[in-house]
Image 1: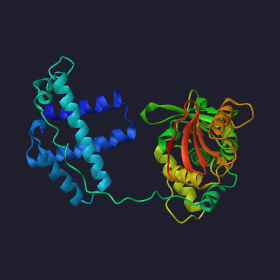
Image 2: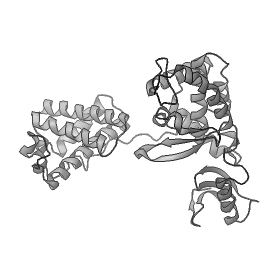
Image 3: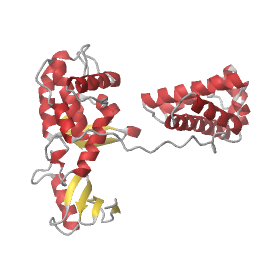
Image 4: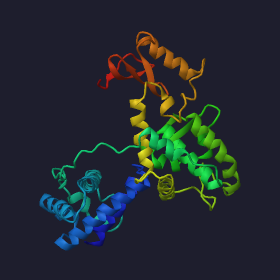
Length: 346
């Protein structure tokens, strides 16, 4: 492809990371997908983006499938192509010749794009699979780590927190020491779309974190803000967490591949299968702020009263003022500010 065409790819990536605030993981995935598209265009003799049509994109998807790429990966690849062309279309509408554009891009590639060639292209349907989970006995065995060195204390705190709070891996490695409030047993998490939320921390996770914090103080470099650090004293990366979780799964004799997101699936599964309390899924403890007189406990009681008393209704999940409640009618989501409720099935 022409240098000008490649500049549009670089510009699109800058836009997605700076304005759309994509995570580093999504940015890397998009980069791989668009690199594959560029290689396809080079093989097919497509020199610029306005020369790529729907047939080309269908062939790109078919070749991806023939090479062994999974349907979900092809879906993500096509999503990257659609997003890229939406960017080109928007740049054309807004004026691709504006002064902020790169010199070679000002020759008008964006302005020549009239349709999104990936708009009607669909990937092969992926088989719908239930997410894999650990059962409560497997989870208990995994978390029964004997006392050890500083890294053992860190790894136990990581796994307890993943299970207690249902965090995503990116959320976990992004935590700072200031995110944690052990007095209220909560942690402030920066989730997808950079949206912050307060998440409860179970009692077992709080104990593991208390054991880790003195070790962290000895390991962390001066000025390091991360809650979890490695031997170097710097923020622990996602790959390191994956490696350590897999290590402990092997050492504890689970006989299966365990990855960090499995804790999140297990958290949700055990929550919904529980008797209606968080005790079985959040580090085997009740919500940290579920103390008499706390603001969240007051909100929980108001929701219970709204539903007609506590006789047949129990709160099984909470986040700020949002509650998931199990009642005779089934599983329902409620909030403390309005009386509407969305049925979640029986």
